Image 1 (tube, each protein chain N blue to C red):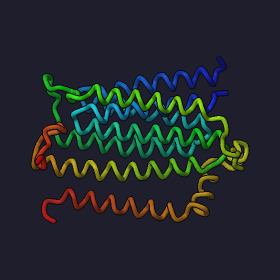
Image 2: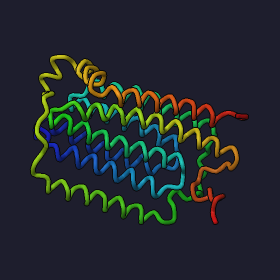
Image 3: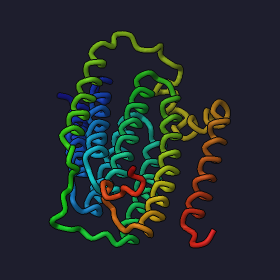
Length: 170
Length: 100
């Protein structure tokens, strides 16, 4: 097992264990803090895949904004952990069964893939020669300009919607 | 060299753990958290394919997925707070005002 495979095995096992812990904690603050560790591991996995800009964006946006939003909501609503309350719903084995069926479905599809798509022209050396951020910037502002503008509209609608939903009197 | 199938299996396992968390928990905050977990597993799959097929499109798509996930988390939590003011419960099977 080479060093890269050993590190990937550490990342994979830790992320699986962390995600199981995230969905099974009783206290939502514990879940959110474990999710923070999970996001940092995901950013490390992006660094494996030669995506440095995306790793930085993952930490800034997910760990720095979305997680803080979750924590603010939990603290604002003052949710206390009640000890005797049932954690899981009554039909939780059905949820576990559907999750297991999904995993078997995805892995069995994976065995049948023999032909991948043709390789593009952004090889690792080309991305590393210009830097990941420069490459993504060039493609984002030339080829994907319309989705970029639509994403900014989505964020504008989200801001207006959040403010309207939180006002006392409209 | 890490084969591509390992990344896809990891993404599938994380996605199905997110599905289990969404379907089986009563707390609404944990349901939102498992939605974010599912979105992150899709991001891992996108970036892995982008690396192994030597294209940049996967990273761009993952960037947009992060943007939309942030907007959706903000709106979802705002709806949650607006609902909590009327009915101070966080358990999804006690929210049955529209029940027939």
